[in-house]
Length: 233
Ligand code: PEP
Figure 1 (tube, rainbow, N blue to C red):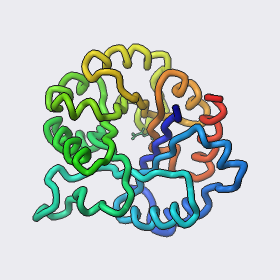
Figure 2: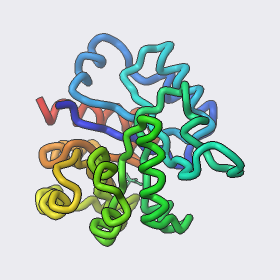
Figure 3: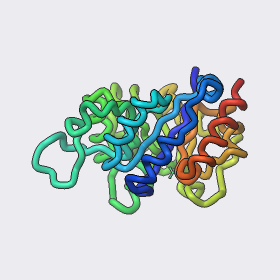
Figure 4: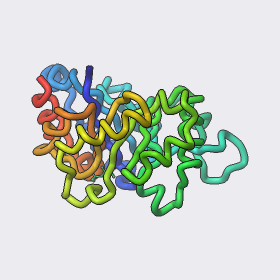
């Protein structure tokens, strides 16, 4: 099975920076065949999704698109929200939901995150449900069983995010053991200070990684992709 490399650009980059990154993403035969064992997912800011789709399609890049959030309310009079309907035709395959920054700075509750998960599934968008330990059990209580079934789980210890202090990859086996009785057997992603040097260790123990900082510079990201790909051959 392919390993997931999920890049979350958060509120970084403007239009020309997005175009530069995507127009310079390596796409020769050598790099294409080297990266076939990876599912590369990119979550740009909303305003650049259409541009990203256009460049990905025109250059036939092996990159899938994700959103960093999704409205729980559906389409209608919800100023500033982005609904599943708004995203139709943009080929969005994944939604990063319940990120700790949204729980912390935008006071998202586990109920709201659960509603967003339901909304994503109703639009056939795969939810990547972000969880730190305090939310393992709490979040599950708000998710109907059938909903939890279809989630990817992203274990993201808050202390590791953006700090340069990644969790010990050995702990991921224990984390999987804690999550499985609650959510069942799921695709498990790790996020928090992953870089080209430690990505291989994480891919030995989980199904993919979620990146913030290491996805911003194209060179750093490509180095990480090659390190990831080589670590799983
Ligand atoms: C994140 O914010 O989800 C994240 C993993 O960030 P970073 O890679 O910068 O730690």
